[in-house]
Length: 197
Image (tube, rainbow, N blue to C red):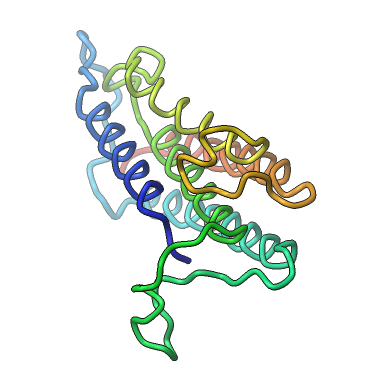
């Protein structure tokens, strides 16, 4: 599914801002007796990554399938690359539709969830509530995705998102995003308690 120029720009700016805020996290004044996980291929990291990926993929598949079934009759799906037609699809002009709008909203939710859930913070660095720029960037991204999901606003036009999603799709996106966040947060926090190996 293809993104519009303003969508790609907004996502890029927010991603850069989140990485910048992440790099600004300060270590705590007092060293923690708890050691961080020392290996990239530890059980904690691998299981957390696979489960979070599965949750985000399920969210994306569900939302895309719902968008495909609820899109207005005759509305075409704009793809970035058509396997049969070569790169002709990529050179055509971008047109907002339900499917690319939903995919973009899901992209915003999962990006914000990834940063919020996987920010380690205490006991090794400042917790997310103390890293104000990071907290506000994540909340702003979640708020933007929610605003795009549930209502008509100037933001929809600015980010080339369908003004109103059909049926209850917007509410379903918000509910699924909350479930995705809760699942990923529970997985990450439960697995983080595993002893480091």
